[in-house]
Image (cartoon, rainbow, N blue to C red; front, top):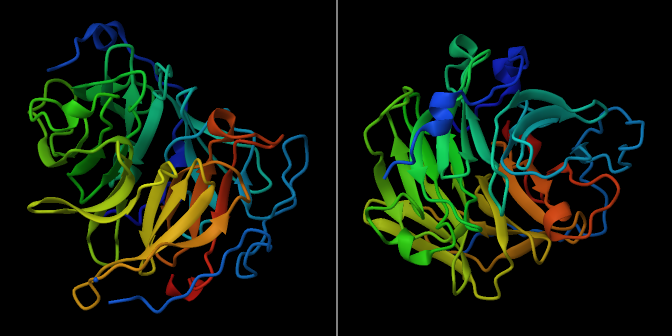
Length: 368
């Protein structure tokens, strides 16, 4: 799996300039478990864990005094990934502008690439993933919204974005999805239901699915393999580097939930009937973490294993400290990075929206 990849380690800063769709791409029609003994303590009022070494003290109008805050004053956020193997920097998708930006604490965000998007509703630049061979090919793949569809595109320096997969239904809501490379030539993409739950169970539709894309060239490609169906809105992927399992979090009609993708289809691990609005998920250090938008929390359940297959009741590890939370990611040592979505779903402070790093109590940095 390529889940430990970081943009910083691939020297993605060499990517220069912005990307735009050429006329051909613009006119292209849309195609058809025993308990876990780990105990977490809420961190709502306490300072960040002392294991996190603060970066330089930032200055200027967007300076945030919280030493855990990496990036500030973003217009909006979507997918996020670590910018280095220590989690001191981050790379984040700015959903409404189509920009991919990077920064660490005390530095100004730097634009790595820009993709034209239609950001109406909850669409826009939804997620991104650097090529596993980025140090040779300098390619980034992105899941975006256009006026006609959601699609996967490939971005190369100095070139227009090239469609890899088109025809993913888009709607006024239900566009948010997720993506990552599982191996050198397999891109896993999760799609939302475009606000139409029936599409998620329709085998002819690409909405509400987890897809395996192995044809990554520009131009017409064969239809991707469907790994799982039936997903709702705001679908996020959280692959486990420890067990190889693929977990999926989403918001369904009756409950928010976390599922695991198995050969027989998705299997529900936990549901939240109160619908906290799961905004992202991450798996690391024996736990599956979810971030929530309405209840403004990070919650953790234990990752099931063959020896310990049952699931603990979720434990709150962070609550109401940064407002509404969106996408998140994890490093192997259990350090989390998450992005706020206060400008769209909360009460923004002057430094929102932000990317934050957080080490839940019980996780240790010596696993790196």
